Length: 503
Image (cartoon, rainbow, N blue to C red; front, side, top):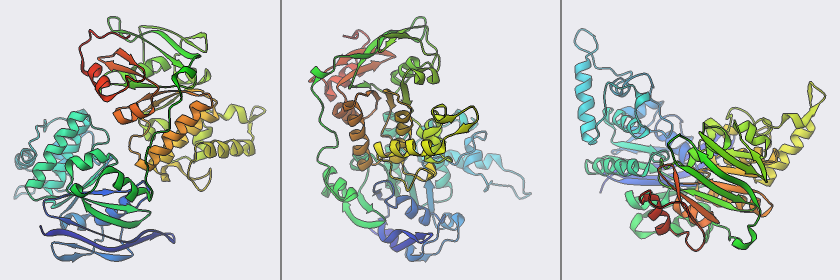
């Protein structure tokens, strides 16, 4: 199979700091080629060079046998490179057709907009993807998966022969992921070359043909999917073997004191009434399919979602939280699913993000803040959760996903919240950082914290949780304890009928 893309000896530095060290890779026509590496390995920089956003210091890019020098994104597009970023570049108030041809509208001989031709071409491209989308609907009304297919259609409308897919499954449901893979297989059959970036190694083995691994800006190697396994890939990515990402669990007998007792939680008048208990030092899992009510239940507890009925106790004291701030005052914190939009102000420094809920404790009189005390507390909180940053003044948006998650965690530790809800705590985080987050979570529970972990990843639920509440249709249908915490048991109750009541 011939190579459509050859990248050779690419180097790139920013302000004297080298981020790519002579990286090379090739992608074949009609191939799905995975690009793997931890956050900070250089994947994004390499792809930005390929799509013309950055210029390399040295090295070459060859497409279909012709060496290319991109002065910008439009040059890369003209050479047949299309990219679907993790954060979409669509205009929400425009429809699919308008987004697909934005800036390249089809006109008639008089220079007027030819909507009929644009709609016809859009339908042809979407038919090529076997995707049915309402072309007149505003992008904001479409599902995340449909928006992603519009992004892919936009790239194909530019006659892309090399398609870069950056974390395309990060926000999709399992059914949407499978649909995306059907589309990718069809594009592969049509001869489109794809570079697939994902932190989910199981997806790599399901959809990809070959894999290139980067580590710390260096090329590590390329291998056929059929010739490797997860352990080998992890070792290539992190430079060591991670025999077991999950720290050992303590004996169940040590979980005696109840710190959160939710006796009754009902979100709608005719809805199910849920109950659960969280014990000191325990990690309690919330498992179930997407839309099963896991996050909604957590938000109901925290007062961020209206409830019809709520009766609960925190450390034996009856509480009815009306907001997340109210919950925080009682030592209950939330690490939200979307850390960038809900958990952090990415343009602020680490210190500002960690201090934002904690300024009263640094107050000197009514008008002044003890900045030395603030900095000291921030540094200690960052040290405790091993935030890798050059200092507390570093802007959070420049950190990797794993370190951003740690900054959110440092805020609640600094606030002395001892009951923590983690909503999808490792989403978008590489395997090495996941192992660090798991270790931090277990060290927190060993020092007296209690955690509710909401996760869609079964291995994570099984490996980390001491007990698991399984949700279906808004109801906790079963609470599992060891040795019941298995994939088979969780899926049995997550997909079973509502006749299985919480036991």
